[in-house]
Length: 420
Image (cartoon, rainbow, N blue to C red; front, side, top):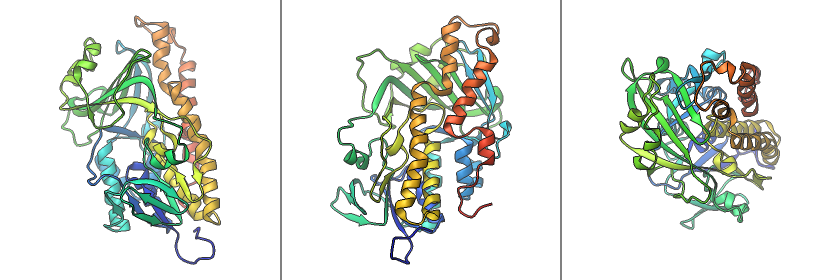
């Protein structure tokens, strides 16, 4: 394992941020012998948010951290992904997870449930005091994290996993400004509804201007029922202003529901799903431009602090998990910290930069716009509108960019040092 030069003590790391990326980084670094302390700005970590997807490459990493059984208890193992047009007609269907031949499942899960699962694991393995709450980092200099309270903390490595509004990223890119909004707004909710398409299918319907996404997130739902996480998305004209991004900002049905009033697909009644949600949250779709550098001395960026991307292709949380595991792997296998950070950035920064840009081009979801452009009134046979080879090329190409094409993932060596 990498150690500070001239020392026989274990490496020490500070992780700034107790989100999915930060907590996975803490577990991963701890697993290779690094002493870790996590600092989180909020004073009370609660299971906030709505649903997210964990792709097989991320589930592999959480499995290797010993969390497979916990994930299986709280997530729905996704069996299929369906893209449909705004009339509910199927454009593309593909198996997912184990059903697609991966060695690991794909899970749909409540974001807050996953965060609490990771938090519990951190406290079990690193100790109940491993996560310090109410500690907002405002900067990191050298080997020291600086907090708004005036306190400081030193370590051999500082991992900035402090999200899309990262103070530590802003310190090194002071002219970057706020995240970039693409004029789309997401409204998100959770509704108990009748199960659809077999009860384990993720659906994306519509086109680039208007979209509805849904998937079940509760494996304990009663027979024939699903707890459906849904996202209604609209694009607004140039010059439109919107409220600052906040995952927990309440939304208003009047702002979007009328646009979906006639979206009854037969197998899914979108207006009823929207209307039955207890609460709705709104969030403008934002990302940040890729940057030329993540690492500054012994400080490095991870997750949204490094590569905030549009929630297209189900990749945000998954990429943060891959960051964490890759960083820990190099911390354990490189000769020193500087070499570990260089290897981590060389592997992860180009890969995630490509993905940020691919998501701006709609990623795999562009098949919906292809159908809208070629057959806005619908179709009798999608093959007459888009050849299957064209649809396959879109789906397979994105998997390669995102790092989860089946053959490569199944054959890739483990990121657990010393594993076979």
